[in-house]
Image (cartoon, rainbow, N blue to C red; front, side, top):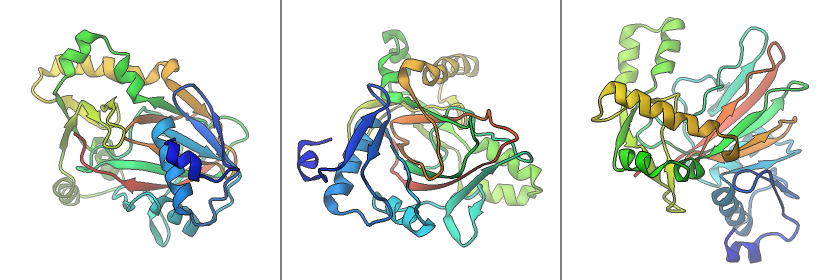
Length: 285
């Protein structure tokens, strides 16, 4: 947190890190209330410092969830995921005995967009008695930990991102090829740097993920696949991670520009019901 934010932030605000570099629980704050300028700046600084911040016991409404997220930017409407009725910006993420969790791949949200997400705000409505944790990985550390040889290979390289697995889901749900082509036109594959520079911290972060990255542009496909396999594996290194155990009314706010996450799908057939709001970011460089 910046020195100015430390001076202006409410004295009662508590910060409890989960690990030395990623993840911190923020206490003594009520997210049902509008954020004043000092608190908003303090939370933004904490997000930049810890990449993901957590809040407990926040029994907020959907409108309050949206208002909190809007404090940090405009909100996106996801074109493929199910929305909460009457709230197009709110993703309804429910898994139970009939719909097993499938977000168990390391990823950063919506990197298939030209301007991917700044961050996501996820709140827990109903959680299993045990299981269903979410892991978060520090992608600054993932980049810093690469060998000089690998860093040289990816320096200045771009990778192609695409909504490929959503396309598969659309076909399963009966979408016509004409409808899919319309999505292809609206959301064409996009190139992003393999290593992006965070627009606020100016730090370098590894910015490829197994969910949406297709290949490294200009590289032989076999070589690209082998290199991407190595890069994807960095998120799975425990020293770069924190792990969050959900409770009802817990909230996680993560920076998609500096972290990846993995929702552990170990709770089937129990119910896990969450809602996510996503803040629009800018084009990576």
